[in-house]
Image (cartoon, rainbow, N blue to C red; front, side, top):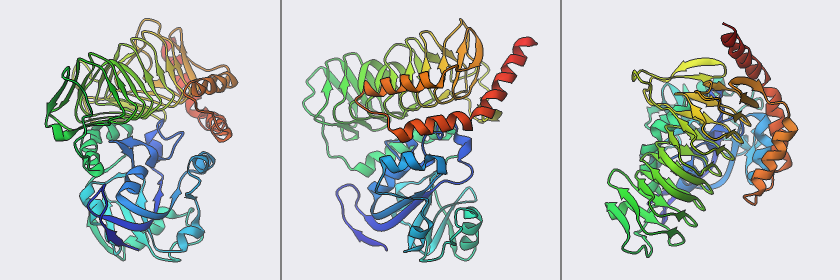
Length: 438
């Protein structure tokens, strides 16, 4: 299963069958994982799945994810085997936990007779032919623990993602690793004398198919900077590393601080610090976004701003699935699910969780920190959105503006999510109303 050869992207790559699985702890990453499996969340330049495909020569791959995501995933990845236990039993396969963010060193040293352990949980294990039981989906974790107990275990490095803010905390490290993974040669294109490049020039990669106007500063003093093809960077933009700007993104006089990933086809203005914009997200105007994760098809209205630091510098609590969780971090911003929107002048409190297809309309003060999926904040009150069909119609229009058609499977997923999130939505609204009464 393991055959080694040299490649341009990494000195040593491995040929293998690969499977990535979700475990029962992915729910703690809501709302980011409501519309995608955990291994498609971005940290650094890539998702875990993209990173593994780049690191290994994958001959065949599969995924084990929550069933309601399977149709959408099949539409976007028809080459994958989805929740297919028979395929998993047909040949030796490297199985990787979808919440694990490995370092390059660990990936290079994976051995088939070992079990990688991190935070007392399985990071990876190789399953032999016919080893998984036919009812593997029913008792997956218990089965893996039994197999692991009979093999040599090693402690591995990297990060096991438990909560949304873990992605933000690990992003600077992952950006540096991913820059090495792609093994760029020096490429600064013909920038002209009025574009300033600071720091080690070998830590700056600018694709030749970019447009960078005069009076732009790109500073790699504290980490690498990558600007992919089709990016447009307007004058008076300042970018600090480590940072990645994805394909087709447009920066409007933006200030982008280190530790930031901006995915493909985003529209970015104002100030951003230590945040991840997954892709196809709009923050075109002034306003601050810090220590936050923004999912696709989100639009942040002009002057939308979030707090990422409390006045007393204490640890930030974040609402997750209706419960407050102590992040144990002093800097935590907001986490915004797909297709959500904010109106002009929206102010997010520290540690805000905003679900899928929600809307925030400010009323002069900070918004509630818990805005569940398919809700709106209207005249200061948290309410269920009155018309799901209208939300889906608007989402379809938004996607068409970027030449993307909503697939039938995506619409079905959104409608199923509306039902799946009903209890969380109802409980949050009841709590909000009780606070208003008293």
